Amino acid sequence: MSLLSWWWPLGTTIATALFGILSALVLVRPAWKARFAGAVAMVLSASLAVLTVGLTSNLKMGFVENLDHVANLLAADDTPAKTVDHPALPPAEDGSLGEDTAPSSAPEWKLNFAPFFSPHTQQAPFTGPESKVESSITVWLPEDYSPTDGKTYSVIEFLHGLPGSAKGVVEALDWENTYRELIEAGTIGPTIFVMPDLLSSQGEPQCRDLQGQPQMETWVTRDVPKAIRSNFPNVSDKRADWVLAGISAGAYCSANLSLRYPQTYSAGLSFSGYDRPLLGPLSDSDTHTRLENTISAMAATLDHPAALYIAATESDPDAVEMLNNVAARARGHLRLATHVQSDGGHSWATWGKQLPAALAWWRGLPADGVKAGEDGSAPAKQPLAAVGGDDFVPVVAKTQGPFTLTGSGTVVAVWGLALLLAGFAIFTGGRGRRDFVDQETAPGLASSPRRESDVRLPSSPRREPAADLASSPRRESDPPREPAPARRWPSWLSPWWVLPRNLLTVAVAAITIAVAMLVTINADSAFFTSFSDLSSGWRTMFP
Image 1 (spheres, one colour):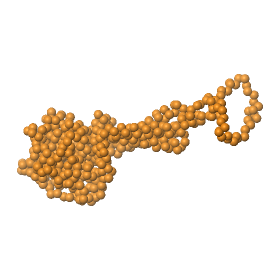
Image 2 (image 1 turned 135 degrees about the vertical axis):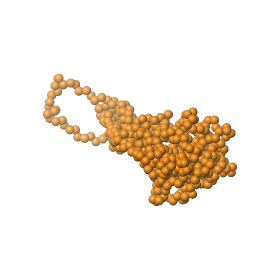
Image 3 (image 1 turned 45 degrees about the horizontal axis):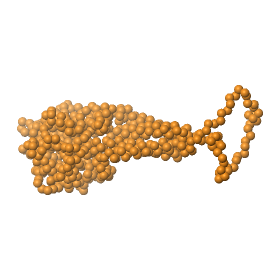
């Protein structure tokens, strides 16, 4: 069942309102059970409001496309696993792609691409003949693309994060406008954008072939490139025109695989990646396996030409750690470039700003992907020279203050306000209703005839007034005593002003609780680290 439909956020919006109204109605009664039920309904309303925000942003970003993706995410397998090693193949001397991705006319390589979510985006289900992975490939094509247009197209293979999907990549990066600007500026030439789905086979993106698990390494580096070359005959057959990029978990994968497969990719572009495996089975594997899949360790033992671009922000400690470690340990075979922003979080708004510079760097690489020395070998200090030479100063991750968007002080303050408003709504919900019906003094009730079926209650003995009060004469100056006003409201309903007041206090409390939940999520994930970053991210998700 597709989650990319307006019916989902519409349904949760209605449910949010209904639970809010239910909370206001229940809190009319001052009993403790009613207060507890009203509080539960209020929290449910706030939770559904957060879910509505998530579902609405999912329409634009495409974090998850269906319930199967959600189930895979919840059932992620972190069982330690061994990798399946493949022999490293050096780049071809003539700069051509390896034979393992050569186009094929066999039926299993011919895909049925169909329009996906925009006029220039196509998607096809694909079972990798070599990896046996059942997934899909999404391709974005330029507006004037034609297999017979005589042009040669470069290929950007882009790996999404967790959660993520092809739709989110194209939409969140605003790729159509970005591509148009890059073409007009002459930064890149004709290019197609390829996005393999990494979430169809397991919960967390994995980029290595693991024993007893889907062979995602083969899927990404062999099946997908070969399928693209078999279905789009005018893509380039030169490795200089192929790049592997990714964000977050996909950034780690792009760095890992681009270093392992120089015969296919001229470079890897990593946006907010990490050095050591942090997700899935690799993160729980033995020390040797984790070390083999640590980017800085791979850079230190690299024995073939490769290129890597690392983008990070000072607010992202994992990405800063990766940048510092790779820059410190990289050997001369690696051409390394880095980009560090002082602001920005772990979000699409940040990556969209970083992408043009990364693509410009990629297209400026030599045709063989590495600057050779006079004798044809790579200079020993090339990676350090790209980021400052032997005097390279490690980047220091920015420490967030207690009252920034990701600070603990902000979380505590917002939750304190939320609990204060919730308590006010709960403990004042029935105020104004107590004792509002006095059947003994209401004239309308006192004058009603007694029916024979009415049950007569035993009367309590009449208490005599105190002597000093009974004997005190009424003074002429005393004002006349007015009878108690009649209140004719039904016993199950409060006066007219109590229910609207409850609706207002419950709505304010539920909204504040929802904001507190969102602030807590943001503090844990560091999506947005400043209000300007939040504003940019909001415009990206809700244009």
